[in-house]
Amino acid sequence: MAWSARSETPRSRLNASRDAVVVGLAGAKRASDSSRATPAVGPLSICRLAACPGLRLATPPGRDSRGAHDRRWQPDGWRVWQDTLVELDCRYYADRGLRSAIVLRGYGGDEGEVHRRHLPQVIVVENPDRLAAARTAVARGAQVIVMDDAYQRLDVGRDLNIAVVSAESSRAVRWTLPAGPWREGWPALRRADLVVVTRKWASLDAALGTAQHAHQVAPHAKFAVAHLGLSGFRKLLSDTPVTLGALNGARVVAGAGIADPDAFARQCRAIGAHVHLVPFSDHHRYGERDIRRLLHGRQAVDYVVVTEKDAVKLRQRWPADAPEPLVAQLGLEWDRGEATVETALDAAVGELTGLWNPDPNRGGGTTADLR
Image 1 (tube, rainbow, N blue to C red):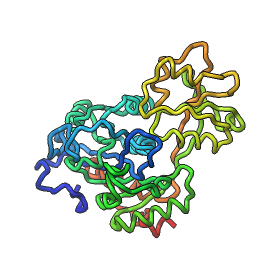
Image 2 (cartoon, helix red, strand yellow):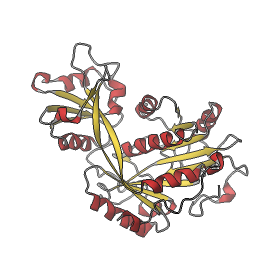
Image 3 (cartoon, rainbow, N blue to C red):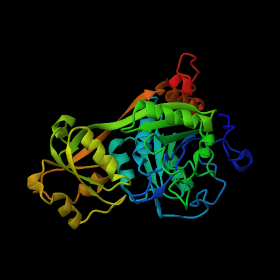
Image 4 (cartoon, rainbow, N blue to C red):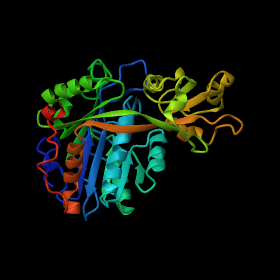
């Protein structure tokens, strides 16, 4: 697989052995303060491993492209998009007989546990040292590595970069750190081979408008548009499914320890629930006092609803005599460009499968094709 001409990592900085294909998503992060504007871009990467295990790294392991360990900057409000697309990629490759691994930093521990719960057949390795994590994944039998939150890691070679841009936050203040919330500005999209514009409550027209703006910045990239919404609920302990309709008109306490709790509350309101939001900081570690907050006035509400990241930390602590919370389930639907995404994923592993041949009848992925 040829190196992408748009990558900013020089070929000379990579190891001579061709041992990994990397797919990356563009990223911006912000401090875990929900009052600040949410950045528009969310990060991810994928590596395809050939016979020689290893990754091509140009800077010391554990140090990112900013050159320092910085735990102050937490995953942004659209982190859920990254997680959903990571899992979508793993499922796509599993359907093609490839063993995938997800490699992530593991801050907070909740995201890795969500992946393990959703994808028990996928290897999940959490380690700030991405090289060590990739080697661990290879030793455990991985053929494809999905490297989450790694677009800024210009020390890691990749063959396919995917940028995730939120339609809702694309109008936010566009200042980069330290003046603003973005890790990188719009020009970073020029490293992208594929841009996925996402929307939660934004209209399709707004998402297409964001894609058009991104196309002006990254004219060589392919484009797709996807919608992420609630698909249902499952009870925290029994895993009993609950339909969306059950919350229509219901009184709900929504607990959310994510970077953008308001977005979760808004999704619940969109299905007809009357929501009282109990926000927590991103990656919040729940204690007894927090559970009491969620249960306060429970006689006056119909349901307590939490995100999947919160469920990971609440499952072992929830009182047996309290009503089970509902855990929100998310679903992704492609508005435009699904075939474009599949073509990109197939091409990234074409040398492994030997099955990929470009199909001229599949979607072209230009912004004109999105209309």
